[in-house]
Amino acid sequence: MHLSCSIPYLSSSTPLSSSFIPKLTFSFPNPVKLLQTKKTTFKRHNSYFLKTQTKPNRTGKKKTSFRMENLFRLVDNEDLFSRRCIWVNGPIIVGAGPSGLATAACLREQGVPFMVLERADCIASLWQKRTYDRLKLHLPKQFCQLPKLPFPEDFPEYPTKKQFIEYLESYAKHFEINPQFNECVQSARYDETSGLWRVKTVSSSSGAARGEVEYICRWLVVATGENAECVMPEIEGLSEFKGDVIHACDYKSGERFRGKKVLVVGCGNSGMELSLDLCNHHSSPSMVVRSSVHVLPREVFGISTFELAVMLLQWLPLWLVDKILLILAWFVLGNIEKLGLKRPSKGPLEMKNRKGKTPVLDIGALERIRSGDIEVVPGIKRFNNGEVEFINGEKLDIDAIVLATGYRSNVPSWLQEGEFFSKNGYPKMPFPHGWKGNAGLYAVGFTKRGLSGASSDAVKIAQDIGQVWKNETKQKKQRTTACHRRCISQF
Image (cartoon, rainbow, N blue to C red):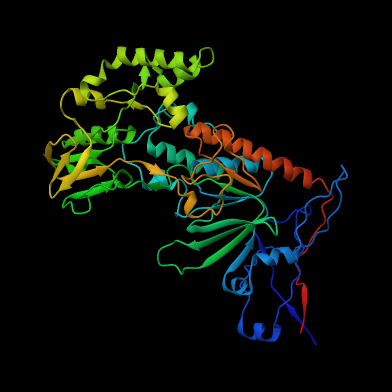
């Protein structure tokens, strides 16, 4: 006995190229019962049931083809009818921050379609929602611009947070990048049977139904970056502290702490700048420094310290450039060890290359430390009600705590892969080899080299995918029209 049934189309985010379209065929184990109790929930765009044949290319080698029976092994019967399943013709980019936008723009230039998934409701959510008001780029704008589109000429050397967000929004508009917002990726894994990636998401918009979607694609670009999740330290008594406790990602301005004694935990660029902002709002900040730290002037004789280092590295070895930078820092800033800031034994550039630890670029905090407006304190032993006890036994009354304890990658929480990424959420291969993995997996923005490193990754990824795409689309394109394919089940 035979039963014929029409199945709606597997959706596609863009028209499919004739060179890479899976062939789809499947049968139901018990079609009568299945059709009586289940409904297909495939989303329909301008999409097709996909069909292609494997043909030798000009070199005589057979290209990889994806058939329907392989694609439907991706989804068991329950999954097939419980969530929408969307075919993406091109790579999926997870994350719509600067790294994801840069990759999308470079793919657009290569003529490769793509889809960007973003868990927030806007692009660059870290910049828009989790940064303090006074933030500016710490490096000159020429080192922070994304590929294919420079900053406006009238922007200052160090653009403000607002200006950088405006630049990113104009960047997305210029390259017609329209992310799928409020799509939180729950898992992503490579299916070896079909040779495709399965990316499962759930709607993250408030008040919306918790709809699940499974995207299927050939390439996956991880662009969630190094700062996806804030790091919350485990310190004795912190959870019982009665005053305000916030992470730097929730800090906007020192106005709310006016007149209060605030403990800033962390002495990186954020910790230094938040301490300075608290001073400017007439608070009394104490900054915890439990390890050594390199502090450099942002500029030396009117030249960006970063730009100077880049210039020197063209002719001199790294160790010598480190020596020069430290001499210049001592000349401009003086001996910072007298202020309770001990320098590491390794130079600032060597520390950056080996451990990814960025030196602090001073924009006025050291002057306030010298004047006593910012107190430098040692590591914390415990909190007790309204006071903090340090490892040297001293105690200090405080009203609030700001945790400038940094961020981390969240890749291990959703990417089911262990060859390319390590357990800490970074590619195992060091720079400059950490942008490409196996089976169509890529990483952008994990170089610990800021926006310039992310831009370099984006260009390489787009060129790599673009070369494959162009080679496959050289074949004669066949016009494919949307139609229902009849599926025959036998029982």
